[in-house]
Image 1: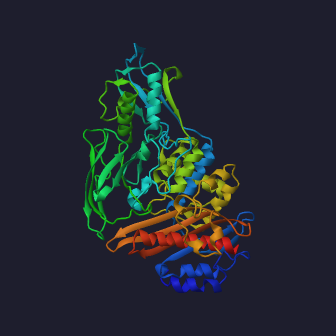
Image 2: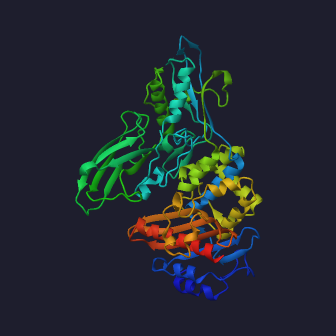
Image 3: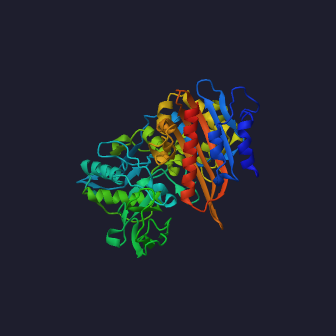
Length: 536
């Protein structure tokens, strides 16, 4: 759409274009002028917008613009993968991570192997607050590198492994004379964003956090979790006030995990007057990716066993010896020496959607596939397409989902998104589904979207919009390029009307302000959502 600004300005004079279902609809109203004014901002002069607002109770469209046009929607895609997993697994579903032994125990010595059977538990006890609740920060460490910072939860990322180790010790085992093995065969490994193969075992969301502080103007670097599997060194020097922040993680996706030593380095320059983005205070967070999660988890578990007083003969840092495992599914209850029961999946759904946890969305799609009888990620995607067609009436022509999280060329029409949103309102899991989404101006990836509150007529929208954000930024020779910013979910309007909606802008183009310009798009979509709240 080359002359999009002219077209946008004329939308209010037309009948809001055609209805998303392929023809005029008498229920469709003109898009409010206040929304058109946002569309017409200079930032969007070359952009294309899509908007569809539907009455949840009647299913009738109210605002409808470019709703049949496939749009890049980024992480809005997570609504589908998490919604179907929540429906298929059930909100009360828990993950059961077990530790059976191979061999007999005599005099406290296990003459055989100790096996941790991975269950796909994304948290492994590492997100449990002191009061037992599930910990979710505003700015998740999984996206620390792209966001420029993060907030770490005040939890022990190794708590689940420590709990399992304590149970092993309580069972009477004082020494493991054989191997310690992670059974990671729950599903077939699949690629995560081309970086590494996902397996059903997780430690600290499979990242190592680099924690940068600046006491007295002298930068320091620490890291979590602490493990011999991977350590971090710092070479960050102080910079002059007003200079640019320049940090490098090397290697950001280490391939050495399972060998010793395996070390990452944080290097660069920290300006003296730097105020960390998002949080406004130190620490500054960056993240290394754990690319061999089974090797890493094996070392972590051995270290936990040693802390619990269980000696282990096996070398702590080594490749996970899967070749020693028995036939898959052949374990018997009589050999069980430890078990970790997770939080219910509804908490995981909230984590994935509130902070836009990409790995968690991919795993949710795989868990949906497992519940449908497949161990293959590709078959899980195909099964999802069938489910969306048969149960939600969503044609494959209206969606393109290369993964579960919204990476790359993830596209959907506003018709498809709102059909899914409407369909989920009829499911028994709906209350958990809507509760899992970010709330405008309150939490998750919408916590900082508050510019709309400056207008007293819009301020009441705070907490009345539950919606998933989606962002797709590329980088070329001209710098960062905002390919897509999207928002989709539910609104309870000022008059009490219950709405489902999908909003997306594509092809914004080069954003010289980088993350600041992306945040402007967040704020503008929050304002549009608040205008919808007020208008209906």
